[in-house]
Picture (cartoon, rainbow, N blue to C red):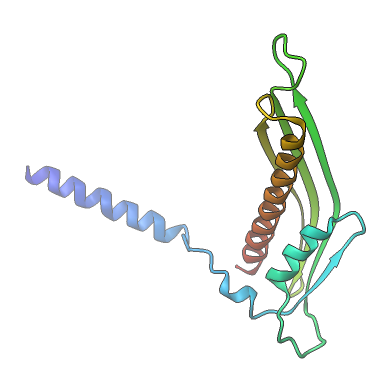
Length: 159
């Protein structure tokens, strides 16, 4: 029994050592509000996505006109793909794929990345109007997903 306690202690020590050695850290979003970002959107970015990004990254009390950090969002695409199966005349599921190109410049560090999001929903139980509303809901979820991905990328470039 004494050997089991020693093994358990050794396993816990190794686990703690590995976690601390990997610089495991919780992402902190509070430093986003301390910075003043210049945002740039291409003409193909939907207004809903622009509004969501602006609410997160723009400060309402910004008095300085100097921007040192830059975020550019461009090349927005969204595609729907119907998935058929069996003898059904309508699609059983609809897959919505979207992508956006992100360019972040913070403290002379620049990172370019293509962000992607994919959602699926069951379409065979919906009428035509409900399917349109479900597609609008899925688009809103994709926009939220992009904002979260942008937040993560900004925090990763600052680390």
